[in-house]
Structure formats: C-alpha cells, structure tokens
Length: 191
Image 1 (cartoon, rainbow, N blue to C red):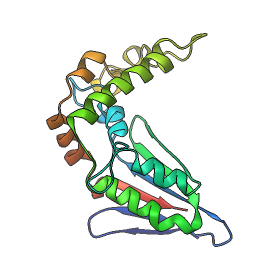
Image 2 (cartoon, rainbow, N blue to C red):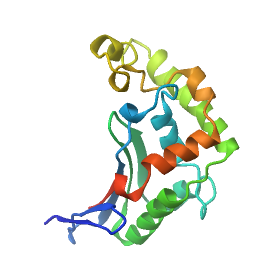
Image 3 (tube, rainbow, N blue to C red):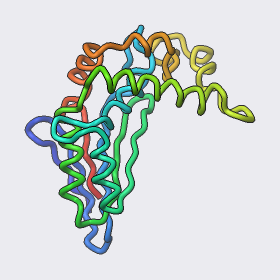
C-alpha cells in the first residue's frame, strides 16, 4: 500500500512498505533538470548533481560513499530534462542511515572552491568519454535538441558547454542550491 504525505516544509514523501523485503530503497527526486538551467550556465544541473556527492556540513568528502558501501549498499544519481535523482539501496536495517545521508546532503552540501573545480573537471571528462568520444557512435544528444526545438530550455546542450562550466562560481552554486534544492521542490521515496 502506498502512503503519501507532504511535510510542513513542503517536502513530498512517498512510502511503500513491504516488511517481507530485506532491503530498502531511498530515492530523492528534485524538480530541477536540464530545462531549468539559465542561459550561460548550460550543464549546471548535472554539475550540481556531482557536487551533491562531495560531502556535507556533517560528513567529509567520500563519507557518503563509505557509509552506503560499508552497509552493503549501492547508490547513484542522475540528471534528466526535468529532474535530478539520488538513490541508495541498502539492507533494511540501514534505513535510518540512508535517511540521515539524504537529509544531511539536502540540508547543507559542502560547496567549496576545491570541490567545484574538481567536479567541473570530472563532468568535462565524463562528457568527453560518454558523449563526445563514444566509440562506434551513439545517440547525438548534443546535436539533436537545437534541431528539434526553438526555446532555450529545450534546445540547449544539457551536458554543458565547457567554457560555461569552467566559469561556474561558488556564488552560482549557492544560488542554484537555494533556488532548486528547497524541500518544497523535492520528493523522498522510501520503498
């Protein structure tokens, strides 16, 4: 049975209990994606997804990874046209840990100049490997949108222009977080 509620801060919560299952999945969907990016900041939604894995006020860089993996779990995140998602699947006994990790990351990500520069380079390399230099071709994600659409939200390169990614500042990151990563702009799903 599904249970839906909205907390006083606007966070939407979806619970799907199954006591017979020995694992728990926790997912956070934030209503921000490629279409939300302002002109001059292409690729920022994807860059910010990477920044959200770089630690928080309570956990140093890589601690999120260690907490999930040491519990026998898996995790990831991805950015789409209209949303960004983060998830982990862990043994059911680690539910409280998963909820803490997501709450802490959404409350106060560790936005530093070092993390920003590092993740800009990581995102650029990911684009080079998975999009620009894909062996045997691949789907033309970068070339197709401007052919199909006229408006910037739909027609721009969601992976990001390298020069625009390199110009990203900590102020840009803080403004993006404040604008899009508010509780009322997200849903937590626990299954």
